[in-house]
Image 1 (cartoon, one colour):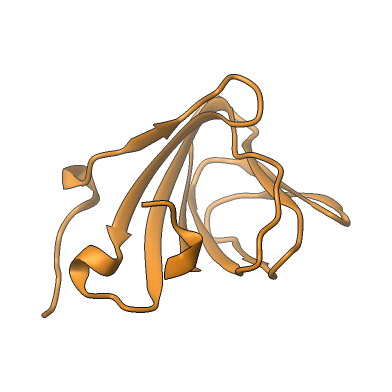
Image 2 (cartoon, one colour; image 1 turned 135 degrees about the vertical axis):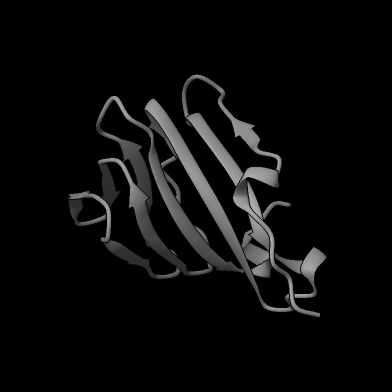
Length: 118
């Protein structure tokens, strides 16, 4: 069945342990609850000073930057990102997304279903 909704109606899950992850809000927009069998689309919002953990895992990410300015740290260094940029993170590549500005960094991230924690 087709799903049409709005990000504003999806509850955010907050990740913040004050060290490995800080100021991260995640909304699962499309996933198994919608009947999507293979992929999960998530919306992330990183507040000022926010960052994801520096980590690696066996699935890929496809990321599209919606708003804000940030940095993607990876095994080969780091690169700035902003609206309209997209990032492919291959399986097992270490990576971290960080907000580099006062305004929130917002991006969409698509992973296979096994790559989402719910």
